Length: 399
Image 1 (cartoon, rainbow, N blue to C red):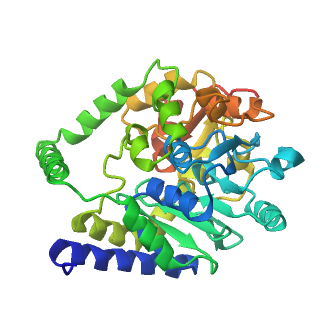
Image 2 (cartoon, one colour):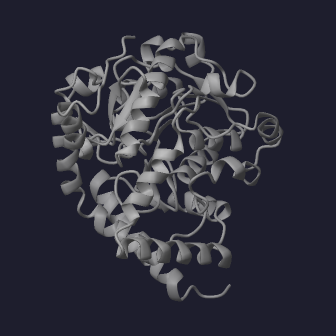
């Protein structure tokens, strides 16, 4: 085996420093991952076996869903709460609880799942609780960070900060060496072609920024991205997907897993890791901006119940429930505001009963999927100014 030298050695040192920052914040050991989506697939592979049934939200992210299928799992859709779009444990039938091998939380937009109840239920059943904490890097419950209630929790950095990668955090029953070995099996090298694409993209971005065109180009791309479409999810390609599900292996799911993140299995570059580390060390500034944004958006009558009435939290996005959501989203994108993290339609409507176990109570998820407008709390003033100027109208959607 050749010794690790040069950029890879530097990357490993930076990854270790990122792990130290995450462990200091969560009180748990962790393992750096090149992406959150690979971290969740790794968790599925480490804790479960092909054929296992896993309870999850029908509003879960596409890549997480495909990562579960790639691990050979059968996703079981849970009813969700009208307050926050997260799993409603009280509405899950008893026969469903007795049939699943694990529970996956989502913590939609940073609003926490009912993790204390879910952990208690999982402990009683002797099954693992897996926390998708991609939206909840800065969220805690009674001072305890989301991601530390489950057997395993998975963080994603790039959703919150200009950074890359994520981390798997785990309890004492999981060995880091086992996770690291599996990570090595799942990762692929950063090819010369991928490096060339990265360099070209960085050079193009720098050239646009030097002449003041980077933001207008991003704004135009977002404005043209999705207006008028009926689905905000990755194209399903159902027949091809069913072939892959019949013989699940991560390589067979690349057409779905690589969407938006073609390097999700590749080592991250040292310059990006260094920037991520600096941002993680300064999360308090980002947290303060998110808290203030939620406080301001609570003035609106379209805000979701938990975001309005629950504890003030540094949400990834503030969920508004509005009529004519897609048209409103297109209007915001034309103004240069990001509209990400829309999971419409729900997974059981999107994938159908051949690929998932449908929810016994799908209406709340359908309502959320069709009406939720996720607003970056850091854009609160821009949204409120547009409403005050009567150039943006938000009409509440009634359940």
